[in-house]
Image (cartoon, rainbow, N blue to C red; front, top):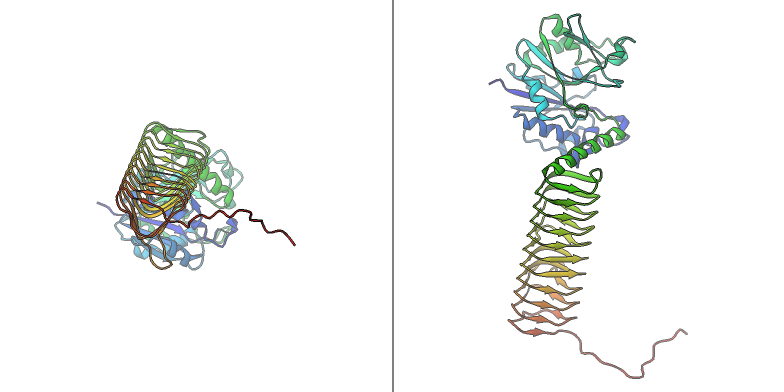
Length: 454
């Protein structure tokens, strides 16, 4: 089987972004544009992925996972042909080579598979698109028989050629042997003084190499990003596709234009997602989950029938069926809520295992803790888990009632069926069915006068 090698051009400065960050590292749907392209290359089963970097090369390497990448440095940006040439030493002669761009992040793998399938020792494949307004793109030139014979860049095009609506996306697939033959022949005698990769199309035509054409389903697949306006436009298109996917899968979105998916989100049937909800990382919502407005859910799994009220933040958590969360709750990494639990307003949890039917209703912090079944945690309760150096654990058994404004100084165990009086500071273990009260004795002083201003 002929190996596929992917070359991703990512050396440009992107001056129109007005940023110190290399253009390809600007984020779309929560991750750098370059990472979208690398992920697509991996979906194609590429034998080799080659990133051509230049401006901000150290930043690109640092931010980009590179286990399966080979980097090539383009020290001077002398055009796309010159950029691809930097990767030539790493391309086996027998390979098919797919050229992609780090600032064209949303090309579908299916589109590229169709393109690569058209490549042979006697043909190359070019991805084109028809645009209503083709300004800025190289135009596809065809001969009298309709075959592609060349690409002309807009700055070098005649007035008649600029009327052509079929344009070059820059994405092409070609055999490595042809690439190694043609690239050294490129000239920079053009308006830009650059070595254009597109000039190999004319070379292929002159040598009788067939030029096959493939096109994407949607022009946004091949839209590049040169400035923040284009990045924002592409972001909204991507999010609309995600919204359509979710609604098709069984979710109701209060407003499909006000949702952001920055990772992988799966949904069951009859899921309801209100406005301005952000999903990051890997998130799953089972059947009947309801998510209120303004929530952020990151790397978490939410079980059937759970209700998440407005403005709650859930991260790295597992939520059981029928749970109730928020409003204004924060579940930090390591939180596990069993079935029919309640975490109410202004409650924060971290590394907390909360048993079935237990409730932490409001204004509490529960961290590094294990709660049994049917525990009731009163308002203002704190598990004091950090002594300034070490973290310690609080264990609360089944059917415990913790009164309001309680401090549980870990490590401490409160056994099943016990009760903690409101306002207590618990520093010692509490046995089964005991009542623990640990607070200063109240004194009422008669005739006391408040201090007065002098």
